[in-house]
Image 1 (spheres, helix red, strand yellow):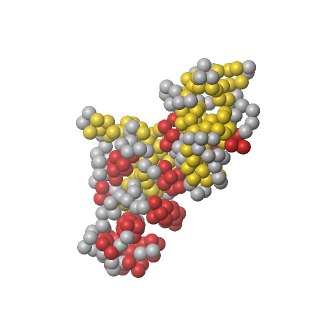
Image 2 (tube, helix red, strand yellow):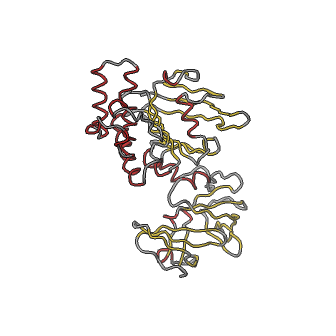
Image 3 (cartoon, one colour):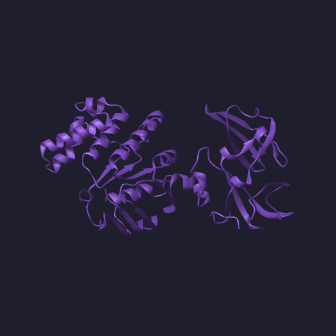
Length: 361
């Protein structure tokens, strides 16, 4: 296990800047997930840690040692790729042991390491097969086993589950989390899937446009997103957003949406500011639970059953609105029902900067 420290790291390809002043300290044994949309720089950062990309500026240190100029083979890191990268002419055990053979590791130690990794990953009965005789999930487990036998300072995962179907991804997420708990190894995992990030991470690093937008536990990013980007990226279904001007009417804080529509805001919200109010669909009240004085009466646009519950769609002026309700829907498409956005559940963001706005106390 090792700490990994990233200090003011930059990456450019000619005039194109991919990463801007990235600072991140990863603790020994921690599982950190880099998450963000395509092109945000998360895979580039992972490849720089691995030594597969040069650092334009800043410093990367592993276990306290600067590694900017250290070749990949000498960083003692194991990387699991999206594409498996298995040798097709080798058996499972040969694929898993290849790196140890290159290091001239004693034969008995190789045998024990491969047997132990195969047992952890459920591959013991498959060690004589070649990759073409394995399923996608089995191949990914072999790739993970190849990484485990090296006993690296840290594991680097580059979107390892993106080639798998939804059910197998769910299974492999559980396997990776269980494996991390057993090994306790420092792990950095790159994904664009926020569900993977939420379920796997000790801490999430949310990235956008080559910058870190927020670092925190899954609960912190879900409950207190630092900006509108994080609020909209984390959570499924995605957060609702409505924009307007904050007002104070008869002592009450309101968000004026225009066209005579307003929403109650938390007490202490700054006045006369252009704000974006966000609320998660699971916190929107609709139907009988929302039917009280001041509730909005909106027609249902669309009903989406999900099995666990129902996603109900409507429009609030120019803004799309979703509610997630447990059980059957509160009405059918076209029916006008009560909607309420509880002010205590609202997240407020400055419309211009996108940064979180806290009520004044």
